[in-house]
Length: 234
Image 1 (tube, rainbow, N blue to C red):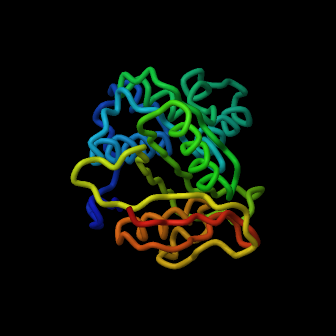
Image 2: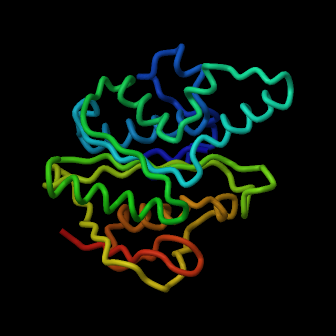
């Protein structure tokens, strides 16, 4: 299921990342294709040139699909696929985005568990302050069905936010600020059941609040502690 301009598209079965060369798309994981699809969509919707925007990617667990495939190869005949191996690093999506969008700008990838969304926002804010006019934040995590991962079983999820130093013409979204650490549990409102255990899921109420232009505070992070994000009106 895809969310396009605030509306669910239940017919969507595969992420659409038309800019990625077909050869790379065939080898890329679902996570990489999801991240590229939402990243390019968010940048385009915000009127930002995706070939010249700085990017911050975030994933709590990385390329789990590729990791499991490689482990299965090891237990089978011990031979690893070079194509799968180079797609197994946690920043695979960042590299594929730079190829797809012909983007040579600064890019970084964070993998910090349930803090991923909040720290991606902080990283993007630092980039805006120091060097960039706009930053594309792209976060996501795949489904995990392996026994050694706590709270496995959530459905795949990816989302993107485009932050700009100045508000684009015709846009009226609010401002974002990460206030700091908090002991409040992560916001669970507006998180569908199938995404409840995905560590990226707290981005959903944040996106909803931005779309509604609702000022206030939202807690992002884990169950026990997280980060407080303040949404202001501009």
